Image (cartoon, rainbow, N blue to C red):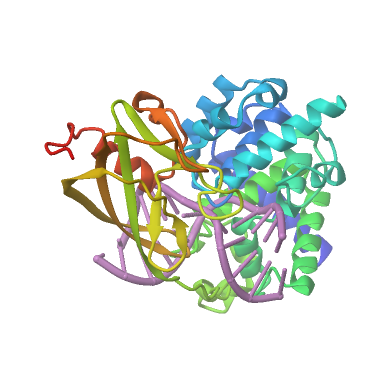
Length: 350
DNA sequence: AAAGCGTGGCC
DNA sequence: TGGCCAAGCTT
């Protein structure tokens, strides 16, 4: 693509964006903290899913100082249901580091890149949206758009990525506000140049799109191979004594890391199985399947009561039942709790 | 550098 | 239904 062609594309793109771009809450502000929160939430997560979380989170933590001062469980609690919980832990960690250093929020690509959880895409997006930097922000949408325009099957490969960035920079040079170019490319990918059923008839880039002239734009980008992962049988135990319940915090780093959970035994991975003598199990059980990206849990949940509990075995602890509602949990444990909390006391005791 | 990390919607 | 997908990052 020549510089002149890039300029023409950029102008057509911005004309389309001003007519058909999305209005989104995090585009109504230049507050870098709010935009940072939105970008973290939007990783691998749909816009419609994020919007209510975004408003709730900023209402609870309006500033980086408020977030830095919060407890981990408050932050995870606001995040419950969004998934990829390490994002929330890194956001929290980043906020505390910024407040500790007292130099405000970053304003450049390089400075954002130092922040935990901020990678190449986010650093460019944040510097562009909050500070006006002319940095190409290549997310999944933009990579797909440029993969098609330039007919590059693997736009993330180093050589292709350079071509993609170069073409976007050329568009920015010819077309005003760099942040608008980034927003426009993302919106184009989300609403026109979609993964399936692209609407080439209304695309402002169609005239120069090599994938379209090739006749089968959906062939780009090349599909990523992804495994489905194993199915694990998981036994989850809700063990109660009077008004209390046994829980533990899952270790950071792994699946649902940092969240609270009920003691569980995994088919072949140990998990956290604690020996509690004298449990009277109820006859009812709950069974369901929970599909993660890389593994599936076939869950069987049981609930029981213990008459004379010893101290909670490490790392578990007894928690008042109403407090369990406020502990951040993953979906499987939350679902088990929603079932178990409705059960009355066991009918038989030892 | 390939694998791990959640959840919900869509067809 | 099950497979695919959605504003990526870390190790």
